[in-house]
Length: 146
Image (cartoon, rainbow, N blue to C red):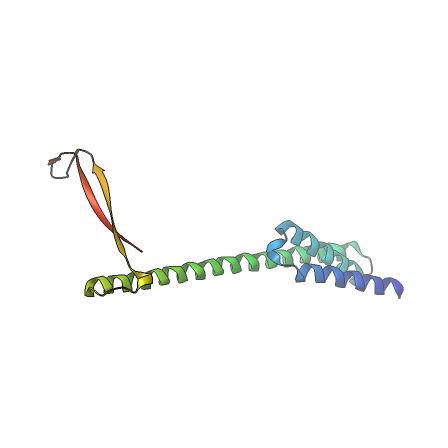
C-alpha cells in the first residue's frame, strides 16, 4: 500500500503543477513533456506495469498537452481581437464627436480643445494623369491636434 500512496501523492503534485501554472508561462514543449510523463505514469499504474499501457498513457498525455496549448493560443487570439475591436470602436466614436463639434462650430471643453497646426509639404515637379506638368511648389496642410 505504501508505494500506491506515494504514487498518488506524486501524481497529484504533478497534476497540480501542470494545471495550476499559467499556460502562458510554461513553454509548449514543457507542457507536453509534463503531461506525457503524467500520462505514462498513469498508464503504467493502470496496466500493472505493462509497457503498452505506459506508451498509451504518454500518447494520451501529449494529446492533452496539445489540446491545452491550442486552448491557450485561441484564447490569446480572441483577447487580441476583442481589444483591437474595442480600440477601433473608441476611435470611431471619438472621430464622430470631433466631426460633430467642428460641423456645428461648438466650443470644446478645455480638456478637449483642438488647436490647428500647419505643416508645409514640398511637392516636387510631376506630370498628372492628363499630361499636365505641375511645377514644384509647397502645400500647407492644417491638422487639428488635441
